[in-house]
Length: 152
Image 1 (cartoon, rainbow, N blue to C red):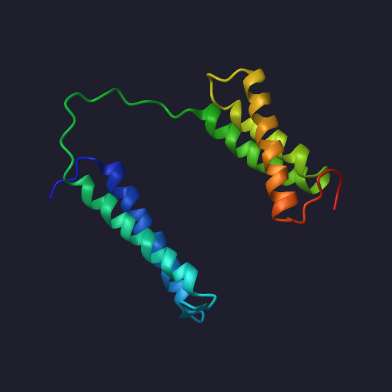
Image 2: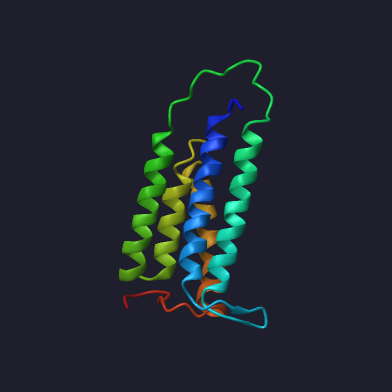
């Protein structure tokens, strides 16, 4: 069996590994049954499903047709990686200090600027929309214990 699409094979293997770890860790808790689920039921089931999806992805890597023309290797988009990493750190810092609204807006704005095609206006509009709906969902519907404005 020759694996032409190594990325698919490695991604599938990673999903099988992570799913297996989740299933093993989840099985250490009480499972319960369908009408009265225990704390290990959901992580074990999710781990098994994740491993199954990984097997399917890795299996299809061997049977895809060979690419006709290989595109030149693309360099990683470091701007996107850096913006997303900074956005996650920014949310952690801002949500604790100034609240959910500024934290969410800053996180989404910086992450959106990682896309070279976005303008700052588009990023601000996206950040405002996500902040509005995120605040409604997490603060008013789910009652997450992060203040909307201000510190904890």
